[in-house]
Image (cartoon, rainbow, N blue to C red; front, side, top):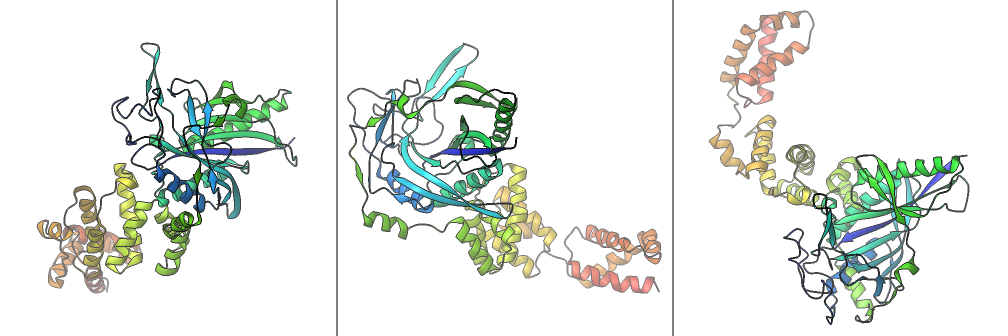
Length: 479
């Protein structure tokens, strides 16, 4: 029997507000354990929460960007469960009237476009962090994360492959980052996903029993987990067994999932309306104001780059994948007046150095004006492209002034024909075998001679001048 994989996602996005959802404690990542807490987020008796309006602003913004209906009258609910990472023994969330509903996000996989439905987006508070100490055989609790605001973006079970899931998560991450809603640093848990997986016979309209893997914060792990769990369920059904609804843990080192506990349903959490928070009423003015101040999203930016700057679809997609990289490109293009050159430096040198140094996009501090200066120096013939790479690296790593660096390191381009002629003549004299190779029809020998000339001139020569002089000298020698 052929089986079809079915996946639904619950994506948790940690919001980029400065304070927590119901108190004034900082949301800054890190810090000594239990130092970003107060009586409200640590669940002391008698305290009252106060809603952070910025959380609602961000939720509306995210809802509009994912084509959701904004719930004009929404409220909070208590989700009760007794884990040590929630000192109140309940989480404030939204079940009955979430702030956003019935949205959709378009994805593209292998040239085919498809809409993924958004069931809802709701606001909630994050829990603390459990730290398991294997040496003392105990579990410690850090409450710094308690009360950090989250959006939970719940999809419809519309995914039919791991590739579709990754395309959706990539687009969702780009969108949230461009909106300024979240930094989506998966390594810090700012974006993580609960993955629900089931399989059903091809052509069936009835979904199979699902399992869930919680708090996954790596695209690579999510991709591997979906393929593994799908295969596990199919093999189980083929052998006459049945899939049990449960929460499973993904072990990336073992490339396998393991049963943890039976899957909870809504009734297990004993939801009821949150008595300490008033309902939220969202008027037309609030929504319009949010719409009017929405930033340009990645897809619109890609289309504009292709139309306005003449970039290819691939180049536009690469540059807009990270918001900070796109901003650097735009400013460089504007300052230099050469958008294609700006794109080449961003996609070439900038991304190469980011990869080599492990620099994240949000950590970039390179100034677009300095990149524009390098482009201008090449265009004006002050330096050649080989030297430009060296200058770019110095700007990236040491934040040097490009013009001063060129002067201090004597990197200005050598365009003195008499000096080039002298060097070319010596290179030809020192490499008689290359001349013999050229006479034998081996064209690559000329490239060797060009390289030797550039090396002798310490990479500072004008390549056009070198080629011109070399051609003239070779025409005499090869007669």
